Each structure stands twice: as structure tokens, then as C-alpha cells.
Image 1 (tube, rainbow, N blue to C red):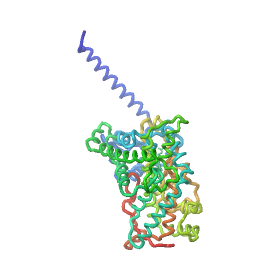
Image 2 (image 1 turned 90 degrees about the vertical axis):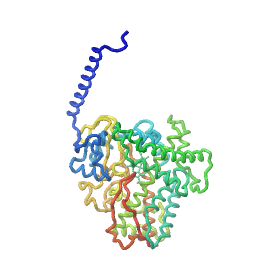
Image 3 (image 1 turned 30 degrees about the vertical axis):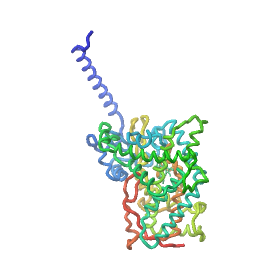
Image 4 (image 1 turned 135 degrees about the vertical axis):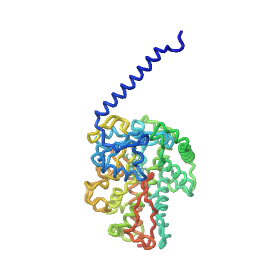
Length: 500
Ligand code: HEM
């Protein structure tokens, strides 16, 4: 019996393997040259076009689209990525071919942060994601459920107004006030109480920052060891473990019905109660483990906290920078308030200009300017171009919101445009997509809009706001900074004076 193959058979195997590889390469090259791929900027070896993203990817990609058109193909490392920058392309992605683009790309770091993507935002499209979205949309974030947390918003907005009042006359940084408001509201509805002290704040900050860190392995898989050597994956594991331990305790408290002091939401069920009940419900054949509950709560913290405070910062920045709009808004609110001490959620329905202000701000400052990435799960066509399965897809809604073909004087903050157009939050208008659209649309729209409207209405009703040290309104710096959401680059410092 021969143990080692003969030289001839070795040579034969080698030559036939080489011929096979050359054939495959040739066939794939030939069929690719037949394909109609979107225009691409020049790329570098290994990193492709990663270096072109810069520190503000939404701005860099908008600039690139000026040269390469509304549908571009970039190679981020070795990840082929389509960037759509027009409302027509967005509509094809999120409506015409929504099913082809309804999944999310996966990565080692996301798997660490989200229990193997058992959350809603990064779960691949499929039965698991569909069932979970149904629970989140109909049980956690439905109209009725959002209404049931009205008292939480009232109390927390009241507390924030109280703090602003205490700082009247001196310079106040609004960002920590807004961060605290959003975190408290989110914690009370999600886990039953707001935690005093910085323990949870710091845990969350550390955890959420991990989503903004560049993971080499995500873009250049053969260099994925760099993420281990650089300590990135260890940090992600540690941040997740700490938050996991915290949430594990909170869930145990819920299971054992032992809630601590400071529970200001004890008359209603919080999200953990609802998820624990859904877990017991076997009627629809969907079963999930505790990791799913924790992953969903992490989504809710990730989606809810930063987005809300970022929005509040930008709305007030625009109002301060545009005194005409501020005056008009204050007039609307004062007329409806009729001397009452606080604006209530019932009042908001009578304030069309306030609603227009919130929408106009989302046009100019969408907190998630490239939406969450999607991935093509089948070969698709986009605006006549070929998009192979496995291509990542980004939609630049920041660019679409500033498209002069769609918006007159797009750089101007002019809420009036939303008084006359029919744009609503249903995701049918592809020129305005701060929450995305289609299957993957944000389920937290109702939840966030009401808190934004209530907080803004009360702040501008109760106070006049000016910039400190005699800085003129028109000189307010509006630079932004890319992160988990697009924040103001510099803190928003104001001097508040009581109005009523
Ligand atoms: C102003 C506030 C908010 C903005 C601008 C925002 C924006 C977005 C965007 C752009 C997406 C991706 C949509 C897409 O890919 O088409 C998204 C998804 C998501 N958002 Fe929000 N969001 C906000 C508030 C919230 C809140 C308050 C929650 C939860 C309480 C939330 C939970 C989620 C979840 C779970 C997803 C993933 C949905 C899926 O993949 O099926 N968001 N959001």
C-alpha cells in the first residue's frame, strides 16, 4: 500500500487545481464585467475607500456623491458597500426591494455586544426578527403603551424645568440636563426605575461607546486578530459583561417582584415585565431566552437615550439661532397654555408649529444620518445597477434632507415647510427619512416624538434663552460630531430667563 502519493499524481492534482482556480476566477471576472455596477471612487489596496469616510462620514459621503452620483459602490476594506443619496434610490431600497435589503450585516464585535445579535436592531431578517419586532412594536412601543407612560414624562420634564429654573441667570450647559432627562425616562419605562448616581450612566456610556469604535476585522476579515491584540474585543466583552450583570439583577428583581426604593412607575408594567410575560406566552410558538430580553433592553437604551438628547440639543440650537422661529413658537404655546404652569401632552395636539419645528429639525439633523446598515440578501437591481447578494447598503438621509431638488433653500431652518407638505411619520415620504422606512423602520417613533415635543414646549414656554457672554444668536457654532448619534460638537451653553 502506498502511503505517499506518487510524484505524477501529485503533479496531476496540482495542475488540475490550478486550472480550476483560473477557470473560476475567469468566469467570475467575465460575469462581473458583464454586470452594471454603480460608479466607484478609486480605492487603495487593503483599506479600499475606508480613508474617504473621515471623521464625518455623512458629510464625506455626501461630497463623494456629488462626483459619483446618488448610487455609489465603495469598498470599505473588503466590504462592498452601496451608498444611496437620493430619495428615489432610498425608495427602491426601502419600498420597491425592501425584502432584498431587510437584513443587517453581522460582525464579531456586534455579536459580542448583542448576545450574538439576539436584539431587534441587528438580528438578521427572518422569523426570529419578525416575531421580536411584532412584540416590540405591539407590546412595548404601541400607542397605548406610550400613553401609559405619560406620568413618567410629565414628572421628568417637570424635574428638568425645575433644574433649569434653579440655574436662571447663569450659564447652563443643556447637554447633561437632556442626557439625564432621556436616561431617566428610558430607565423608568424600560426597567422600572431611574437609578440615582452615575453607576448605570457610566455602564451605559462605556457600553454604547463600543458601537462607535472602529473594528478592523469588520472591514478586513483577515486582519481580525488586530481587534484582539489591540484590546478592542476584550473591552467590548468587559463592557457587555458589566451591563449584563446589572440587567441580570434587574430581571431577577422583577421575577421576584422585589423592587427597590425610588420606583416611580409601580402602577404600570415596565418593558421587562412585558418581555417576561411575552416569554411565558407560548400561544404563537415563539420562544426566547433571557439573553433576548437583555438584548432588547440594550437596543432600547441604545435607540432611546442618545437619540432623544441629541434631538433636544439640536432643536434648541436651531431655535436660538433663529429668533423669528422661536418667537412664533412661543406665541403658539403661550396662546394654548392660557396661563397654566405647565404644558400637558393633551396641549401638544393643538400645536402644529411645534410639530413642524420637530420635523424640520429632524430634516437638518437626523441623529442617525446613514440609518443602520442593511445588507442585500439576494442579487438585486437598484436604479438600474446590479447589487450582488452580500453587499452592505447605507442610505444617506442627511444628504437627502438637504437635497435642493427636494427642498427650497435646504440649509435654512424653516418649519413652515412642514405646515404645508403632507409629510408624516409613517415612512411613506422618501425625501424625509430620519427614522428609516419599510420593514426595518424604527419602532420608537411615537415614543420619541412625544417626549421631544413635551420637553421643548415646556422649555420655551417657561424661559427665554440667550447665549452667554453676549454671543449673538447668529454666531452659535453648529458644528457636529459623529458618534452613536450626530451630536453638537460643542456644548450648548445658555442663559435662561423666566417668562411665566
Ligand atoms: C428621535 C429618536 C430616534 C431616531 C431618530 C431613531 C432612528 C432610527 C433609525 C434611523 C433606525 C434604523 C431604520 C432603518 O434601518 O431603516 C432605527 C431603528 C431602531 N430604533 Fe430608533 N430612533 C429613535 C428613537 C428610538 C427609540 C425611542 C427606540 C426605543 C424605545 C428606538 C428603537 C429602535 C430599534 C429597536 C430599531 C431597530 C428596528 C429594526 O431593525 O427592525 N428608536 N431607529
